[in-house]
Image (cartoon, helix red, strand yellow):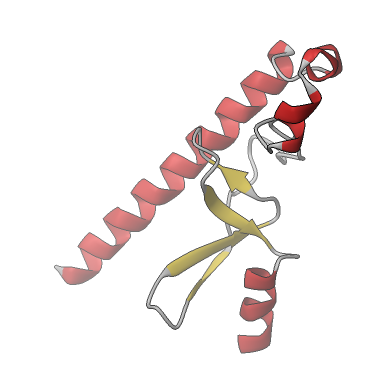
Length: 108
C-alpha cells in the first residue's frame, strides 16, 4: 500500500513537470517571450529577474527527469536534462549540470 502511494505521488509530480515544460514551450512558440517583447520591457524589470529566460526544453517525448536525490533536510529533488520551472518560477526539476545534479553523480 505504501509503495502505491509513493508511486502515485511521483507520477503526479512528473505530470506537473511535463505540464510546466509544455506550458513554457507554448509560450515560446507563441512569441510571448520574444526578443521584441524583451526589448520593450523596462531595464529595471529585467534587472529584477522577472523577465522569463528561455531555456532549452528538450523534445516533447523526452522524460522530464531521470533521477532524484533526497537532501539532508529529507527533501526530494528531481534531476533532468534541462531545468523546469512552474508558472511561479519555482524550480521543479534541476539540470544534471547543477549542484543538485552533481550530488546524484557523486552518489553513483
